[in-house]
Image 1 (tube, rainbow, N blue to C red):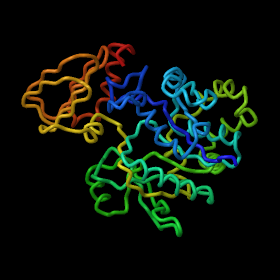
Image 2 (cartoon, rainbow, N blue to C red):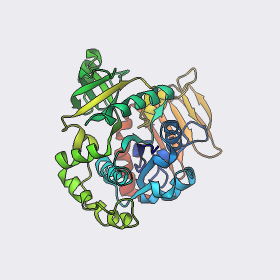
Image 3 (tube, rainbow, N blue to C red):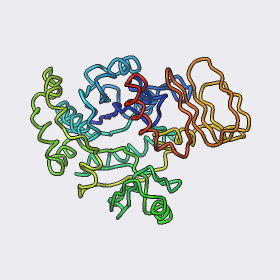
Length: 361
């Protein structure tokens, strides 16, 4: 019997908030952050394989990362690696992948995942996805995974839950989305018990998400609808190379999820971090008695507290008097920056690019 369940893993981002570890030629999803011998992308695939077979896993990435993908995931066949000729955020990526899968299987349901998350409770994660897949298979619904907030975090989007769905515990109608609130509003959200972090993980049937694109994002739908009959054929690549760059750069949240009236959320506790920044890595890593995190390097730290040390190669770091800093080095770049101001690192990367060139980012 054909397995109609597919997984799309989005792995084309540059991870600029993790500079200088994450670089344009090898961004964070391809790095082994925890010394396990597996990159974040490989861990994502390992995590989903008990639920969805390798032949039904589709990777969507930038064309410049084709070689790294094949090196790290030889078990994924080449036809399942969709190479974007330009970066256009998550909505065009998801629309293309849905068309590709629908051409392979008109009954397909899809789990859509980022490639760079940390999930500690893997069995619970798969149980959440299993129930979510059953829900979307039988409903014209778009489902997102909402995670119970552990703090009034201002770097995440929030989902407000509405009425629960009968026969599907933990699945509720979405009442509202809020993008990255300020601290006071985030505190209100946390205290209310009605708001959950938006994980960026989604489930839907291929036909239903494409209907949603047609209704809510016709400027994207029209571009990819023009390729019907070409998807999953030798002509697909040529078509995508021709049209992909004309798609607007927009997230799936803005394009579809915040507009659609058939959006639901499955609430979950899966030991999740989006690993979106040095602070997120600090919060999820083991710390010594001084609160310091050492990532794969030798450190002599005197009177240093709550600091991340991360360098490549056989180097020794000697530091004194640092309190709440990032000390990170990779290749030709060294970052020494307050953890509390890490949201500025993206701008730092832009400044480095403008002043010193692409070779440093």
